[in-house]
Length: 422
Image 1: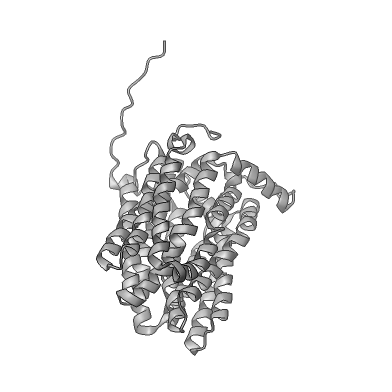
Image 2: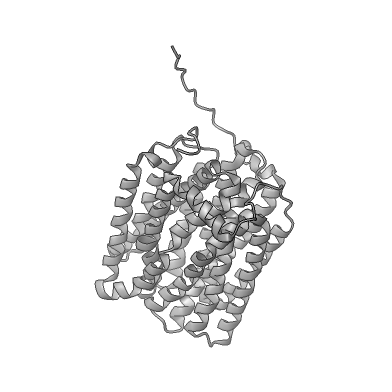
């Protein structure tokens, strides 16, 4: 008869142990460049939104410009996943950083002339989106190559999530200040320079070889193989579908209608920068709480944490109140860090390295494919049904979807020790 042994919890890890991943040279080099690049990237959406509004546009025009960034991401993601699995991540990410830096420099120059039609903004933002679509699957695949000691992988993901969170705090707040003082063009110029720093960091990386796609088949054949692997993992496609509908119904309306409400009723760019900055502060807090921790059922914890995203939309729907909106953004940011860190580590833990690029790409396509529809439709729908009604639908959906997904055994019961095909 088998004897059941008592599970003894691991002792708490000291701060030095939790930061041991910074002893990995290539990870630290990438971390510095990535964080710098993210700072500029987190500033740019504020500048883009208010450049449209300052030019006389409204919610519909903001939605179209934001959608122009997301749609190209979706279109090139799958090709980016195949190229990542064939050639590796570094070169693709380097090209993406250079491309996006050039685009933001051109955008800044266009705004500085004082003649920036919406059509030109859409075109530039679309090229920016192409660069992001190439970067995303490569980023999902590069982290295991940066962290040689695999027991530190979760801490590496946590620190990268913290860098995103810190940039989300500093970026929008700094963007709001610079936009108010110097205008959106200055913000986009800063963004272009930070992409240059990110490119320099990537250029200096020395990464080990790893298994990749066979490179002998067609792109279509490799995508078909990747799709089979993606659909064979219920936990992966279920959470991807949840994130896709979140972007359509919750996040897209919030990004479009939030700046509009801020301009009309909360004081403009400064108020919106504060909201997004506090959202980032919550994400920093969530990342600090996650550092050195690995919950037994990661997807269940991630799903519960994602419920916090319902609060900012609910706060706006209830009536513009900056204190309540800030508080809601804080909780949502905390949940976003917990959810994002656990989900990234889960994917890297169970997906074989030779599939990471393609499966990351399929996950990103599923997450973002319908997002442009939400961005484009938020303005017209709010004009017909009211901003509060559109935002409330999103908040209710987020809670209901989280409850349904949490009830599925493939998500709720998955543990670190489970086999890769469960």
